[in-house]
Length: 299
Image 1 (tube, helix red, strand yellow):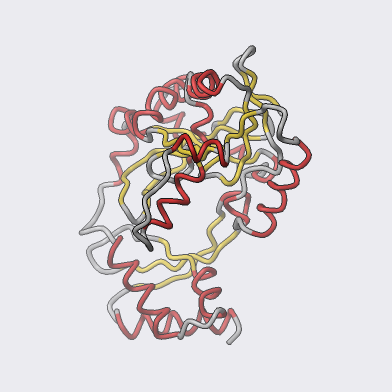
Image 2 (tube, helix red, strand yellow; image 1 turned 90 degrees about the vertical axis):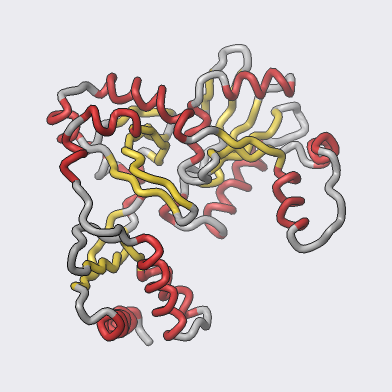
Protein backbone atom coordinates (compact mmCIF):
# COMPACT_ATOMS: atom_id res chain seq x y z
CA UNK A 1 0.00 0.00 0.00
CA UNK A 2 1.42 3.39 -0.97
CA UNK A 3 1.48 6.22 1.55
CA UNK A 4 -1.25 8.16 -0.28
CA UNK A 5 -3.47 5.08 -0.31
CA UNK A 6 -2.68 4.51 3.37
CA UNK A 7 -3.89 8.02 4.23
CA UNK A 8 -7.11 7.50 2.29
CA UNK A 9 -7.70 4.16 4.02
CA UNK A 10 -7.09 5.72 7.44
CA UNK A 11 -9.67 8.43 6.75
CA UNK A 12 -12.19 5.83 5.59
CA UNK A 13 -11.48 3.58 8.57
CA UNK A 14 -11.79 6.37 11.16
CA UNK A 15 -14.91 7.74 9.46
CA UNK A 16 -16.57 4.33 9.72
CA UNK A 17 -15.82 4.18 13.46
CA UNK A 18 -16.65 7.83 14.30
CA UNK A 19 -19.17 8.78 11.60
CA UNK A 20 -20.17 12.03 13.32
CA UNK A 21 -16.60 13.40 13.37
CA UNK A 22 -15.07 15.88 10.96
CA UNK A 23 -11.72 14.56 9.66
CA UNK A 24 -8.84 16.28 7.92
CA UNK A 25 -5.15 15.73 7.25
CA UNK A 26 -3.11 18.89 7.70
CA UNK A 27 0.60 19.53 6.92
CA UNK A 28 2.30 20.34 10.23
CA UNK A 29 5.77 21.96 10.30
CA UNK A 30 7.76 20.39 13.11
CA UNK A 31 11.23 21.07 14.52
CA UNK A 32 14.02 21.33 11.93
CA UNK A 33 11.32 22.28 9.38
CA UNK A 34 10.20 18.68 8.97
CA UNK A 35 6.67 18.59 7.52
CA UNK A 36 4.43 15.77 8.79
CA UNK A 37 0.84 14.81 8.00
CA UNK A 38 -1.34 15.45 11.03
CA UNK A 39 -4.71 13.74 11.30
CA UNK A 40 -7.23 16.03 13.03
CA UNK A 41 -10.45 14.54 14.42
CA UNK A 42 -13.12 17.05 15.46
CA UNK A 43 -16.28 15.80 17.12
CA UNK A 44 -19.35 17.86 17.97
CA UNK A 45 -18.85 19.83 21.17
CA UNK A 46 -15.07 20.21 20.79
CA UNK A 47 -12.96 22.96 19.28
CA UNK A 48 -9.46 21.49 19.55
CA UNK A 49 -8.05 18.03 18.90
CA UNK A 50 -4.82 16.12 19.46
CA UNK A 51 -2.78 15.86 16.27
CA UNK A 52 -1.95 12.30 15.19
CA UNK A 53 1.02 12.04 12.84
CA UNK A 54 0.30 9.50 10.11
CA UNK A 55 3.92 9.30 8.94
CA UNK A 56 4.82 7.28 12.04
CA UNK A 57 1.81 5.01 11.72
CA UNK A 58 2.77 4.30 8.11
CA UNK A 59 6.28 3.33 9.22
CA UNK A 60 4.68 0.91 11.69
CA UNK A 61 2.51 -0.48 8.88
CA UNK A 62 5.59 -0.97 6.68
CA UNK A 63 7.26 -2.82 9.55
CA UNK A 64 4.46 -5.37 9.56
CA UNK A 65 1.72 -4.06 11.86
CA UNK A 66 -1.65 -4.96 10.39
CA UNK A 67 -3.92 -2.12 9.30
CA UNK A 68 -6.69 -2.89 11.79
CA UNK A 69 -4.21 -2.57 14.65
CA UNK A 70 -3.06 0.76 13.21
CA UNK A 71 -6.63 2.08 13.35
CA UNK A 72 -7.03 0.75 16.91
CA UNK A 73 -3.84 2.56 17.95
CA UNK A 74 -4.92 5.85 16.32
CA UNK A 75 -8.30 5.75 18.05
CA UNK A 76 -6.81 4.79 21.41
CA UNK A 77 -4.38 7.72 21.25
CA UNK A 78 -7.14 10.08 20.17
CA UNK A 79 -9.59 9.05 22.90
CA UNK A 80 -6.81 9.15 25.53
CA UNK A 81 -5.89 12.73 24.69
CA UNK A 82 -9.00 14.46 23.36
CA UNK A 83 -10.39 17.30 25.50
CA UNK A 84 -13.70 17.00 27.32
CA UNK A 85 -15.88 19.66 25.72
CA UNK A 86 -14.78 22.99 24.32
CA UNK A 87 -11.64 24.73 25.53
CA UNK A 88 -11.67 28.47 26.17
CA UNK A 89 -8.74 29.53 24.01
CA UNK A 90 -9.21 33.24 24.79
CA UNK A 91 -7.35 32.74 28.09
CA UNK A 92 -4.11 32.81 26.06
CA UNK A 93 -4.60 36.47 25.12
CA UNK A 94 -4.23 37.59 28.76
CA UNK A 95 -0.59 37.46 29.83
CA UNK A 96 -1.54 37.13 33.48
CA UNK A 97 -3.18 33.78 32.71
CA UNK A 98 -0.09 32.16 31.21
CA UNK A 99 3.01 33.96 32.49
CA UNK A 100 3.66 31.20 35.04
CA UNK A 101 3.57 28.58 32.23
CA UNK A 102 6.19 30.16 29.94
CA UNK A 103 9.27 28.00 29.35
CA UNK A 104 12.19 27.75 26.93
CA UNK A 105 13.75 25.01 24.82
CA UNK A 106 16.69 24.62 22.45
CA UNK A 107 16.49 23.99 18.72
CA UNK A 108 19.06 24.10 15.91
CA UNK A 109 19.49 27.57 14.44
CA UNK A 110 20.16 26.88 10.75
CA UNK A 111 17.72 23.97 10.51
CA UNK A 112 14.91 26.30 11.65
CA UNK A 113 15.96 29.47 9.84
CA UNK A 114 12.58 29.94 8.14
CA UNK A 115 10.72 29.70 11.45
CA UNK A 116 12.94 31.91 13.60
CA UNK A 117 12.02 35.31 12.04
CA UNK A 118 8.43 34.69 13.18
CA UNK A 119 9.20 33.83 16.80
CA UNK A 120 11.10 35.55 19.63
CA UNK A 121 14.45 33.82 20.11
CA UNK A 122 18.06 34.18 21.21
CA UNK A 123 21.07 32.78 19.36
CA UNK A 124 23.08 30.34 21.50
CA UNK A 125 26.15 28.74 19.86
CA UNK A 126 24.73 26.98 16.77
CA UNK A 127 21.34 26.76 18.51
CA UNK A 128 18.41 29.02 19.27
CA UNK A 129 16.57 29.51 22.56
CA UNK A 130 12.85 29.63 21.77
CA UNK A 131 9.82 29.93 24.01
CA UNK A 132 6.54 28.14 24.53
CA UNK A 133 3.59 27.98 26.88
CA UNK A 134 3.35 24.66 28.72
CA UNK A 135 -0.41 24.18 28.93
CA UNK A 136 -0.44 20.73 30.51
CA UNK A 137 1.65 17.60 30.99
CA UNK A 138 0.70 13.95 31.30
CA UNK A 139 2.15 10.47 30.81
CA UNK A 140 1.11 10.70 27.15
CA UNK A 141 2.99 13.94 26.51
CA UNK A 142 2.72 17.70 26.84
CA UNK A 143 0.28 20.24 25.40
CA UNK A 144 2.24 23.32 24.36
CA UNK A 145 1.84 26.50 22.31
CA UNK A 146 4.88 27.98 20.58
CA UNK A 147 5.18 31.68 21.37
CA UNK A 148 5.29 33.94 18.31
CA UNK A 149 6.10 37.59 17.75
CA UNK A 150 2.42 38.59 17.65
CA UNK A 151 1.95 37.18 21.14
CA UNK A 152 4.47 39.65 22.53
CA UNK A 153 2.56 42.43 20.81
CA UNK A 154 -0.83 41.76 22.39
CA UNK A 155 0.77 40.83 25.74
CA UNK A 156 2.69 44.14 25.56
CA UNK A 157 5.93 42.60 26.80
CA UNK A 158 9.47 42.58 25.42
CA UNK A 159 11.64 39.68 24.33
CA UNK A 160 13.83 40.31 27.39
CA UNK A 161 10.81 40.06 29.72
CA UNK A 162 9.84 36.81 28.01
CA UNK A 163 13.33 35.39 28.49
CA UNK A 164 13.48 36.44 32.14
CA UNK A 165 10.13 34.79 32.84
CA UNK A 166 11.17 31.57 31.06
CA UNK A 167 14.49 31.54 32.92
CA UNK A 168 12.58 31.72 36.20
CA UNK A 169 9.87 29.21 35.26
CA UNK A 170 11.56 26.44 33.31
CA UNK A 171 13.63 24.86 36.13
CA UNK A 172 10.49 24.90 38.32
CA UNK A 173 8.10 23.53 35.71
CA UNK A 174 10.62 21.03 34.34
CA UNK A 175 13.15 20.06 37.06
CA UNK A 176 16.33 18.48 35.74
CA UNK A 177 17.11 14.77 35.86
CA UNK A 178 20.82 13.89 35.82
CA UNK A 179 21.97 10.28 36.12
CA UNK A 180 24.80 8.04 35.09
CA UNK A 181 24.14 6.26 31.80
CA UNK A 182 24.82 2.85 33.32
CA UNK A 183 22.31 3.57 36.07
CA UNK A 184 19.64 4.16 33.45
CA UNK A 185 20.62 1.02 31.56
CA UNK A 186 20.51 -1.05 34.74
CA UNK A 187 17.02 0.21 35.46
CA UNK A 188 15.86 -1.07 32.09
CA UNK A 189 17.54 -4.42 32.68
CA UNK A 190 16.12 -4.72 36.18
CA UNK A 191 12.62 -4.65 34.75
CA UNK A 192 13.43 -7.95 33.08
CA UNK A 193 15.46 -9.64 35.82
CA UNK A 194 15.93 -9.57 39.58
CA UNK A 195 19.72 -9.17 39.77
CA UNK A 196 20.79 -6.47 42.23
CA UNK A 197 22.08 -3.20 40.81
CA UNK A 198 25.68 -2.10 41.34
CA UNK A 199 26.28 1.07 43.32
CA UNK A 200 26.24 4.31 41.28
CA UNK A 201 29.93 4.86 42.05
CA UNK A 202 30.75 1.58 40.33
CA UNK A 203 28.69 2.66 37.33
CA UNK A 204 30.49 5.96 37.12
CA UNK A 205 33.86 4.23 37.09
CA UNK A 206 32.74 1.84 34.36
CA UNK A 207 31.12 4.47 32.17
CA UNK A 208 31.67 8.15 33.02
CA UNK A 209 28.73 9.29 30.89
CA UNK A 210 25.78 11.12 32.40
CA UNK A 211 22.38 11.75 30.85
CA UNK A 212 20.90 15.20 31.48
CA UNK A 213 17.23 15.82 30.72
CA UNK A 214 14.16 17.06 32.56
CA UNK A 215 11.72 14.97 34.55
CA UNK A 216 9.24 14.97 31.65
CA UNK A 217 11.92 13.74 29.23
CA UNK A 218 10.67 16.29 26.67
CA UNK A 219 12.86 19.13 25.35
CA UNK A 220 15.31 18.31 28.12
CA UNK A 221 18.40 19.56 26.28
CA UNK A 222 17.43 23.01 27.53
CA UNK A 223 18.60 21.95 30.99
CA UNK A 224 22.14 23.01 30.03
CA UNK A 225 20.84 26.57 30.44
CA UNK A 226 19.77 26.07 34.05
CA UNK A 227 21.72 28.44 36.25
CA UNK A 228 24.66 26.85 38.15
CA UNK A 229 23.73 23.31 37.05
CA UNK A 230 26.72 22.56 34.81
CA UNK A 231 29.13 24.40 37.11
CA UNK A 232 27.99 22.50 40.20
CA UNK A 233 28.22 19.16 38.43
CA UNK A 234 31.63 19.92 36.90
CA UNK A 235 32.95 20.99 40.30
CA UNK A 236 31.64 17.77 41.80
CA UNK A 237 33.54 15.77 39.17
CA UNK A 238 36.52 18.15 39.36
CA UNK A 239 36.58 18.27 35.57
CA UNK A 240 35.44 20.30 32.60
CA UNK A 241 32.69 18.65 30.57
CA UNK A 242 32.03 17.55 27.04
CA UNK A 243 28.35 17.99 26.15
CA UNK A 244 26.98 15.60 23.52
CA UNK A 245 23.61 16.73 22.07
CA UNK A 246 21.92 13.35 21.71
CA UNK A 247 18.56 14.96 20.81
CA UNK A 248 16.35 17.95 21.63
CA UNK A 249 15.21 15.91 24.64
CA UNK A 250 18.54 15.18 26.34
CA UNK A 251 22.29 15.65 26.31
CA UNK A 252 25.12 13.42 27.53
CA UNK A 253 27.82 14.85 29.80
CA UNK A 254 31.33 13.35 29.79
CA UNK A 255 34.25 14.49 31.99
CA UNK A 256 36.92 16.13 29.84
CA UNK A 257 39.73 14.36 31.65
CA UNK A 258 42.06 13.60 28.75
CA UNK A 259 40.78 10.07 28.22
CA UNK A 260 38.27 11.18 25.60
CA UNK A 261 38.83 12.44 22.07
CA UNK A 262 36.82 15.37 20.77
CA UNK A 263 37.02 13.93 17.25
CA UNK A 264 35.73 10.55 18.37
CA UNK A 265 32.88 12.14 20.28
CA UNK A 266 31.95 14.27 17.27
CA UNK A 267 31.85 11.20 15.04
CA UNK A 268 29.70 9.45 17.65
CA UNK A 269 27.14 12.27 17.71
CA UNK A 270 26.99 12.45 13.92
CA UNK A 271 26.57 8.69 13.60
CA UNK A 272 23.79 8.59 16.20
CA UNK A 273 21.98 11.47 14.49
CA UNK A 274 22.17 9.69 11.15
CA UNK A 275 21.06 6.27 12.38
CA UNK A 276 19.17 6.55 15.68
CA UNK A 277 17.46 9.96 15.97
CA UNK A 278 14.45 11.06 13.94
CA UNK A 279 15.08 14.18 11.86
CA UNK A 280 12.72 16.39 13.84
CA UNK A 281 14.45 15.47 17.13
CA UNK A 282 18.04 16.23 16.06
CA UNK A 283 19.57 19.08 18.05
CA UNK A 284 23.06 19.41 16.59
CA UNK A 285 26.01 17.49 15.13
CA UNK A 286 28.48 19.47 17.25
CA UNK A 287 29.99 18.53 20.61
CA UNK A 288 30.15 21.39 23.13
CA UNK A 289 32.66 22.09 25.89
CA UNK A 290 31.89 23.45 29.34
CA UNK A 291 34.78 25.25 31.07
CA UNK A 292 34.77 25.45 34.86
CA UNK A 293 37.08 28.46 34.85
CA UNK A 294 34.91 30.60 32.60
CA UNK A 295 31.63 28.94 33.63
CA UNK A 296 30.56 28.90 30.00
CA UNK A 297 29.77 26.56 27.11
CA UNK A 298 31.60 26.84 23.82
CA UNK A 299 31.88 24.91 20.58
